[in-house]
Image 1 (cartoon, one colour):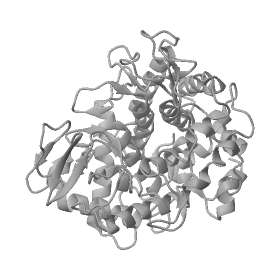
Image 2 (image 1 turned 60 degrees about the vertical axis):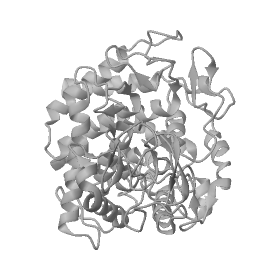
Image 3 (image 1 turned 180 degrees about the vertical axis):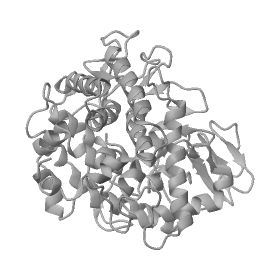
Image 4 (image 1 turned 90 degrees about the horizontal axis):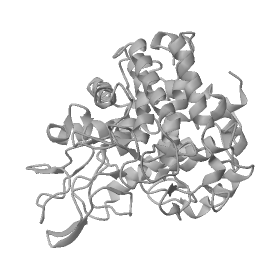
Length: 473
């Protein structure tokens, strides 16, 4: 990746209403300098989560912190992306980021692959969802994960395009990234072709569920179609997108493809700039997937305003439901109303909503809807910051409704005057925050990935046309 001066020299991108190429301010219309400073502080703290908690020798990034945990391969992908954001802002040197990135890719490239139940990190080029932090091998009986491998590869291919200099270590980074991507055997994990299975266990075989509805699987299918060695066949994207119509809704916002938790509208957009490019499905709707995610963010705000569940804290300023930690699995009574709560779960409008707000849902939507996302960041910090904002930014989740628990909590604690507050930061929720703030500010990650030939090939094979994809370079 370019350092900040080099990037801006090539024409940094800014969204409408944001300061173009600005290193220190993010000022959507109607927000204050204090709000912009808070967003800057949030981005730096969230970057430092990855820089400080990842093992520098292996690149293994923890699933969560400070609770001791296994490593998450998706978090590694976000970490590889975050390092370059740190370089762009002068928080670390390019040499330091390069060394950490090279160590990570070397470790992944050397990690043992095989079909046994123990002693392996992956199989057929895919990696297990979670890896032990000492040897980097399969943790417990977790699955070989297709989507988490895709999130890892998002960071790997970003590193391939960002480290574009002649330094021997950058040459090596590019080669290792190419090797890791080419190793993935995408057709192998399509037992119900052409759809990709969600994963595989050596004990029981392929997971019975496929990536068969609109969700974060966009990145997954684009990577699978773009493979120069083991690609999925022509027509795969169309077979998948033909299933989208049942998710089209106008509830709580303008018409859009609905997926309840916000991460489904964010993850693929961390690395791919969907502005102005469209497949046949979105062309038929007259919008693109970026606009779809903008509408999804507004739908989350609209749901919080409607607040059909009567949860405390929901309003036009504080909103955001996604997959995140929760207090535990139990039912209690609040002001005569029975309330059911969950531990870690995917939450969304009308879907397992238990009053648990995840700051990443709004904060990582800043590239889509900066005006409401920045307001949400500021409001959460103003109302609850003393309890939920710490060393690495916002803790993963909080719940103002739960002020007493009927049994021991699975996560976090009850804070008087606030409610339940998580005790951990989660890598897969931290990653979109640091990356999407950067995409909102400068478009650096998007611009870098536009140059990656595998991403271009995957988009074109999926049938995307128009916009930047029609241009070379």
